[in-house]
Image (cartoon, rainbow, N blue to C red; front, top):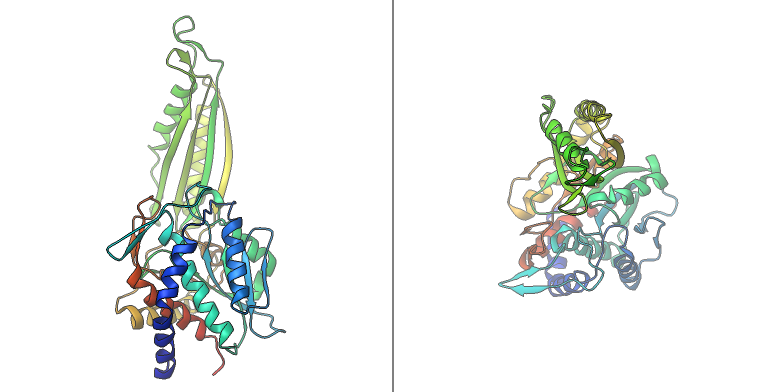
Length: 380
């Protein structure tokens, strides 16, 4: 990065700081559960159009896509941040401000990063930056939970191998994730005849059988090739205290950075299910979602790509980048062998809680990172 370009980036971020905080306050109140991001999507589209963007659409997956660069381009780099949050609220989200911190559900994951994406895109639009290749500014849907990365999956289904590089802005500085944590997620339901707790005592209980399966799942030894984890995150079922449960279900997932480990966990999971079949209940297994892990990557190309991100993060934060593996929208390109980084652009904490917060003073630094990455694709 030249000193002149760094000066331009610094000046733009400084000029935006009040508008940046105000935009976060506005966007942060708009509810956006996964698959119900319509209002945030419409806001982002309208905001980009108001800044002068000419080619902005909302696709069938509720992704907002703003296309920049040469008209005849055949390859694209994607800059993305997700619109959805983990909470189901459909009313305006609660928000409070104290000590320079803004508190709200989803405010850092991923609303503040989305604000930085939008303002950096505006610089390209209003300064009519000439780009070497096509750029897609994407406010994508369905990153969280059982959204299963469906927004990014839809983006790649539409653009395929025309996407040559991918940046997702998510979570906190100085994250620079270049390793995908893949996961498989299931709902397992057990059904039995049930009955009265006294009169029919001794009949199989769906709760008892399901708990037996949970115990067996927790005896599984994960593969050692890479960090591999598993979790039963929710159990529900039964009717009342004096009823033998006719039905019970649980949510179960396993995760790893290594696809072979995921395959082994899948086999062990299926063996556990088979072991409990025919022991008084019927088991149904529903695959809720797959987040793919790392695919056939050119490691040297990915390292070079990540090194550029690292240098920009160091320049503006003075911190060493954090390469902790994560499960993010970058899973999709990484699974396809496409270089991708997930980069945090805000300071904050308590993600996935209603007390999540961001430090408003950190926003300009994050904007500098996003804009600097975009300008790496500008013509000299």
